[in-house]
Amino acid sequence: MNAADVETLERATVEAVAPNEMLEIGGWLVALDGGTIGRAKSAVPLSHDLGPQALDEIEAAYRQRGLKPAFRIADVPGLEAVRAELRRRGYPVEQPTIFETGVVRDMAAFSEGSAVILDRPSDAWGAVFLGEGFDPADGANRVAALTRSPDAIYGAAGEGGLVAAVGVMSFGHGWAGIHGMRTAPASRGKGYASAILATLGRAAQARGVERVFLQVEEANPARAIYRRAGFSPAWRYHYWR
Image (cartoon, rainbow, N blue to C red; front, side, top):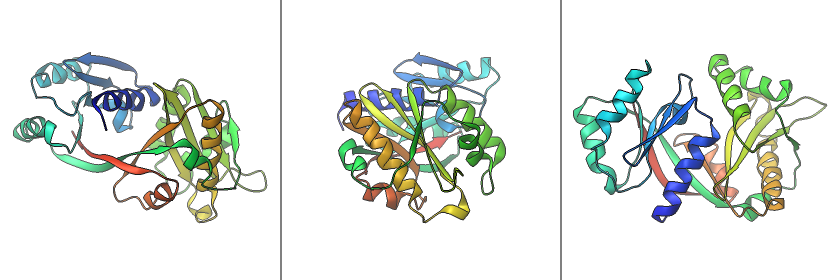
């Protein structure tokens, strides 16, 4: 992954979850938000070769707004000085997450199943985030943030007029991004997630977009689906907060 792609992907990743405010401080993109989405309320370096010089100013930006400082740091050698300084300051490290990239044509060909594409999320779409098996407060926050996502489309799948699975595709900086993939627990294993991925992939193809990214927690079994859809790890990151 070259330096230009790293910066582009980090910008696209944060913009897709529409934080209340974004700043750029010393080579970092600082997302300022009081919600539950980690990417929307943490600072991320725009390079994988950066030192800790801006940490004081970033911490101050959070505290001036009544927010707790938080950082999202890739596990790469070029950021070891940042991680060492955060450890020295007492930040706990949590939530190992894999940043993955893929090719749109592979995702589009992954499944013959079909899903509905929405320009705006419906109440039934949002209800999946609020249903059994999900934290309703977190779900409501994610629905609100993803609804604000600029230039996004929304996938939904199910049977009998019921929405059982959902997802989002954002577009920006020449990439498509996959976000908010959720399937109701009682409907898992029926191919809905695969159908949404493929349908969103075909929508990206129609726009002429060739590359796609997503983030998934390291322990999430959905990684197997993403692997079959052609995604592969680019780097791992942790939250420090």
